[in-house]
Length: 419
Image (cartoon, rainbow, N blue to C red; front, side, top):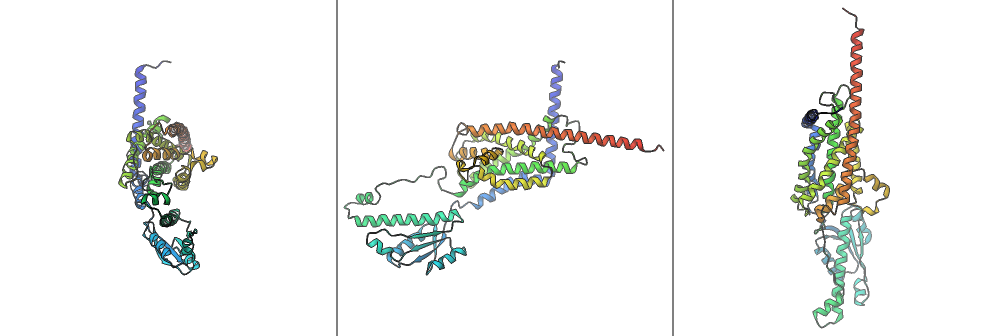
């Protein structure tokens, strides 16, 4: 049977009208549902600001350290003064022995201990190597880094000065070469301040997009189930005549909302707090398009698989922190076991975080993140097909339940005695 161009045009027009109707219906549902509105609007607006404000300082400063000075010499006091003058360490107090210092650390009054032995100056005067013992609280890596690196830097500076003084050189240049024959320049790339905020916030922003999208879509679907007297996800009407129309209509509503929210998260928030942002907006736009679509279709699929809206919240909150580790941001990707790397490929955030960090913080182009971009488009196609399947099944259930209900009502009417 051949279709005329007019009938094809009429079918396309009806499909677009049905998709637009479902879009309006979903937008109305988002506005009316306070829970969905919170996850779609309020959380993306204010949660990143709170998270970024916490890490505004970027680095840990003035970490409290207790000193056990058993030498009481001019050199030991010089070492203590230089450590205290550094921006990262603050000499909190002096302890009489190591047990007293450990007590302060165990009570979290101090984060580290500098133990200067009694033979510290004696070894130096004999031109022997002297040591300073450093005890660090390893429960907080940032504090450990500040305490250890400060002691290391001060000891290297004092060692160079002592070596220069004992060298008996004629010129300042000879003294410099003798103290440091092999010099180096430390250049921090991509994260010039070495800040924790610039390191972790980009990954968190991408996870917020996925987390709030899935939560909002799940709540909306759960509300539709609870409000329907027949326990159907999709109410039957003349506009719900096709699986693709429903999926496109709902996805269009979510995309319109999160196109604005995503632009705010990835373009505005990093610049408000002066985080590193050197990526070109064209590359970001072309990369975030498949990421946003993959998150939308992933959320639509999950919303149909999980029956109750409360379960969506529990599941997403439970997996958010593991997903942050699986992105390879806080732990090297090469050190993640293969099984867990395979699990991470199921979530759009894995490739979204990696690609966004490389583009926005390292200045990469689309060709540099081509593997992540391909995986995101693949996830978009797979989750779109999965969303179509689960919505088709929901349509089948809705029609079957409605038919059974209608037959039951007709049977009841036939069983009633005539008046």
